[in-house]
Length: 315
Image (cartoon, rainbow, N blue to C red; front, side, top):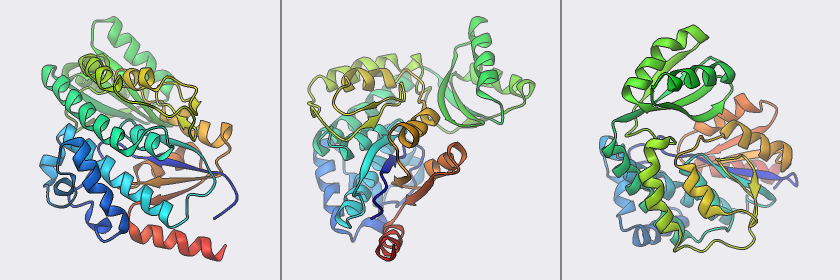
């Protein structure tokens, strides 16, 4: 493996797809699926192999499915000896839990239990309030923030939920609020695309879920020292010196500062290469827009892992 420091990144909800576990089924790391199922109280193998795409859109099931795949991918990469020199980890929203397990901050058992409870809590909060999300593209963050602040000052419940990459900001709030933002987006040079999600995540609409998650987090132990994990809420790296209970609760109602998190990995932690572990290549695309000079590799299946291993053997 390259002696240069590497960073691991993990995708979140929305990257799930039907039968996404099938490519990993014959790997040694597939055994983790049974353990995750036991601690989550859900048949994760069923979710990864046989659950249809429509059912996988359900918040709690989508989150468990993505967590399961990321954990299998991470473990298989570790077995292949490809994770030497990890200087930091980060995950997008749900992916932060994968990052915490990968960094040694959380056990797999506690990670699975927390993801299951988080998903259930977010689903319940979403069912209690008619909210949604939309991606506002092409407009600069400053103009998007001005638009959202102006709408909220006028009594429209809408907030910035994700700052993903230059020209890509996700908004969250009431359906009427997102529709209003869509109408006004052209005025700041942007376009809003409604996202097929189950609620207004990373907004005050998730306050009931945050309270419920706090109870679950109180029962969990975080490691005193671990590989640095960059937190979504403030884009700062923590290696045992942060209050992950507080950070995880605040994450549900606060924006995901992903663009800043990537810069923390590359600039502050010195990661010369970033590896995305899990379904799809969503984060890879974002990272190439954020830091086009940084190498990023998507490991979305065993074939990609084998190709990376072969390349490293020749290096």
